[in-house]
Image (tube, rainbow, N blue to C red; front, side, top):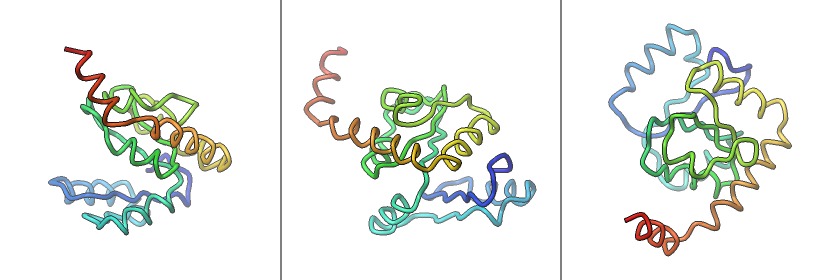
Length: 149
């Protein structure tokens, strides 16, 4: 977040063991006023958060599937992920429905800044993500799993 242009804010959703550490690091970097640690939210609030977001940053490491990538696309939001994300890379196509950045803060921030500077492009990438996600079906997932055996 220190590399992201103001007034962009970060909203983090979910419960986890790292909240105190995140708060500490945010304070030390001087960005705690730009972070909302929402914790666990109900479905209605999650939908509201997606609707109000510029994009979704998914900083996973070697994730198996990355369901939230599809969730973000279904909310018509571009996804920013990293080259070491794993499963989300099966869905995110750099420059088509999001960005794939190097797993370093400055590179991720550059992708956020690019979308913030061009809201039309952010919306276009989100629309492309929606088109990608709506093609994913349980039948297709099962077929792919069976073929990989």
